[in-house]
Image 1 (spheres, rainbow, N blue to C red):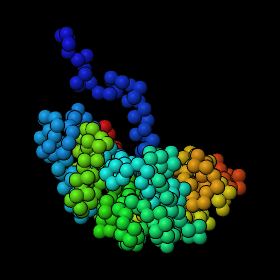
Image 2 (image 1 turned 45 degrees about the vertical axis):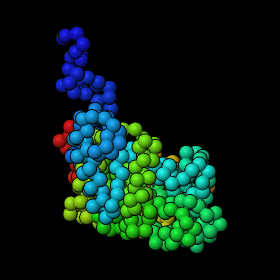
Image 3 (image 1 turned 180 degrees about the horizontal axis):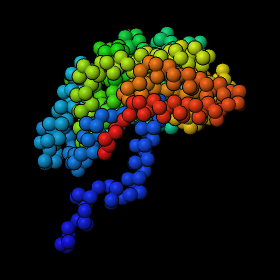
Image 4 (image 1 turned 135 degrees about the horizontal axis):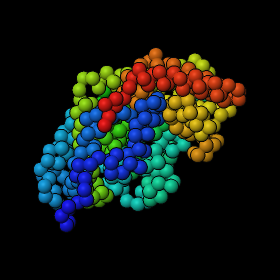
Length: 430
Ligand SMILES: *Cc1c(COP(=O)(O)O)cnc(C)c1O
């Protein structure tokens, strides 16, 4: 070894040799993903191609600015990648402008705030406990601390957004920005009605389609784009790609504001390995197979909801139009945190989630949120999702009566193992 050379193996020895502690944790995580049925609505299982793009030498590159107008040299190749991601996003969602640089969905929303608002401005958005998102104005979030948030909720009776109530709040508070879309709202949102209200009070209208973007891309959910001034999304939920966010719009002047709010306003260099992953997943979503995947996600989410309701499990709004659904556990007298632990031990991973009007704090909750995207990617169909609904109902019933939980968990664990073996993931990994 010569002086100044990197240590032996730096460029060619793999992780297992160089850092077994991290490598072993990754191996165990792979096994966990292979052996559990993933029902967390904000997760999916990316293609080998997306994984490869994300793990590429693009990790080394720093640039600032936009393609053709960079502050660093050596940008030719990453310009190609960013242009592809932009073109594909525009083609997929039928819009004229896309910013593909946000590191996450929250940052995509922050960019919108920064481009349109000043601290103290009024924002009308769905309350977190009604199914909104932290980054839409929740009290502890920057959005909630720096802006004057007027929250709207859902009707107790049916769990749906009450558009008359939204209109009343808008007239009363004259917000500069109105936001629709959330983290646990399972139904189609009336984008046109929101836009009418926004126009009446002179507000911009943002739709955050993080959860249902894949269904919009696949043509099985109405697109917010004809109605919203701006649309944000994550790329890793139903859209099934790299971790990160995107901002979409049709208006040239707004697009310019978004670009400068992102850089130099908020972020420095984009994560180019993730941007390549976004380009790849957007390319995948443009292929005909993706339409089939999106239709199956929706059919599977609905099959799961139906199976649960047939077994006296309450599903908020009585079903779903999206990849996610929300279970209300109050009928069983159960808490979301305990139920999610019992499901995980049975091989079904999901998350506790507040339900509308939830008396429990967010660390406990009275609900579970389930999603069909990852299981669908794996190949599961409506038969399997109905069966999963049966397993969940059985586990919840056992918890409610306090008898047979261990047996139900063991039965479910055995079936999950069989299903996972029948629908393997990453069998050639790494
Ligand atoms: C998941 C989600 C986000 C953002 O998530 P990040 O964790 O910041 O990537 C934003 N909005 C909604 C509605 C979401 O569901």
